[in-house]
Image (cartoon, rainbow, N blue to C red; front, side, top):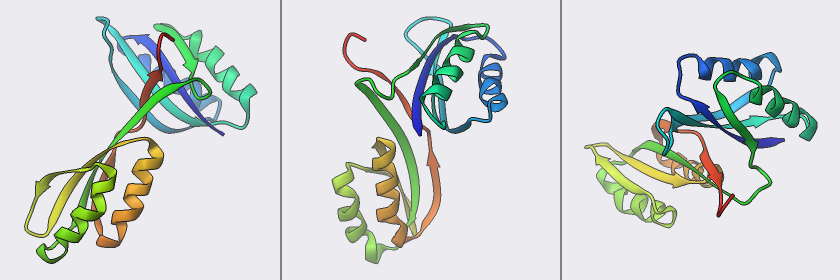
Length: 160
């Protein structure tokens, strides 16, 4: 089962290594990981998407992560009202003859063309993982030359 876990951590050397080491020891696969600074100096937010067998395993992982040095707080936000976004850059084959068609296909996704070459275009799209996957499926017939996805980042909505 897919779980989204967020953590605030002190921005010190080795924190990410210890954090991911807990998951490795428990044989939990990381589907995506995103790390970056927060509004507080020297504090970073880690967002991971993991596949676990059940809720009990997710709870055990969170307990172990909370015990790590430099971890401030770990939460599973999957079942809470939350926001999540992912960014993808996709380089697609786009000779001049198919560009108008390609641009009309990407329009419903609110994607942006950020680079144009003689035979390809680079498209930026943001949204949920499901939206990004749907976008990739739609542009795949044109021929994807390169694809880079950031992984999910997110936090709870409202006052949580």
